[in-house]
View 1: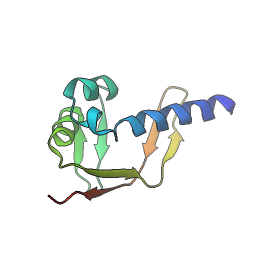
View 2: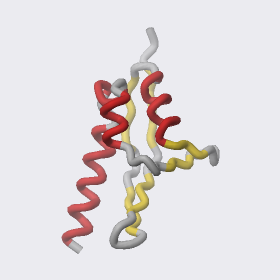
View 3: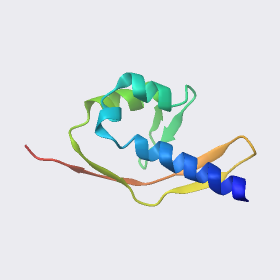
View 4: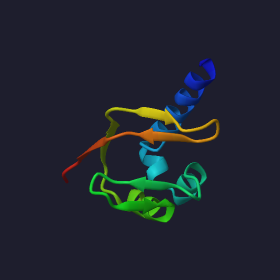
Length: 93
């Protein structure tokens, strides 16, 4: 189970790096961090792919995004499902 906690810590670190404004504004950095076969299912049920997420993060208004309830479900020895509702507070100009 120690390997599981190492993996979970690594996944949390990667998710937290996606919250940094300099990463969110860099298509190249996002492309390096997000898997080519990435799929996100939003709370509305909408499916997002890698290109959708990169475009969205690049165009988001400045703000403070936080991970609210980070969870990982190990589906196999090579697949993990990251579940994390997030909150975003926009900065008014």
